[in-house]
Image (cartoon, rainbow, N blue to C red; front, top):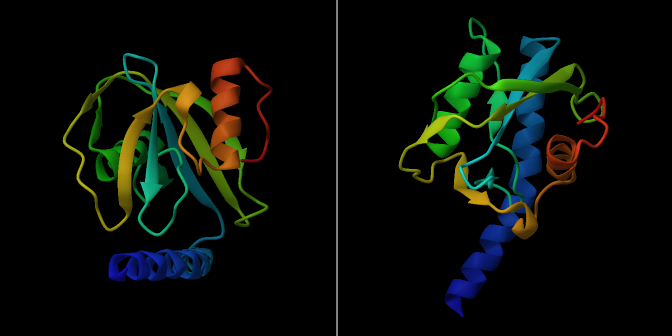
Length: 166
């Protein structure tokens, strides 16, 4: 019973903390920069399973990625984020799939989506940022995959029309 109470409390804290932390980070980046660029990767293993990550402060599953830092190229940021979030090292050039606006959620933000098929997988260890990183068969995606992630998967795998917004 005590573990259930702890788990319930942790889940509630995540639901409260994630939006609050996200909001503070967005305000900080907005002060620091008027426009931001992010990268996301749709990584496919040899069985065409898709890599998804579960952020520490959330129950959702998303494509790995994050912000491009000053002095970094988009591909350098992609490599850094894949290493940090999933212990993945690029072994070939990622393919730029599309550029999306995140204007509805974060004014001035854009996301570049890359498709990655050539990589080396290291030993994933949970971090302060990412709780889980796993490959999933398209027909067996976990509960909690975000709507934007589902749309990107359909665009890449089903040739659905690419939307302008994430």
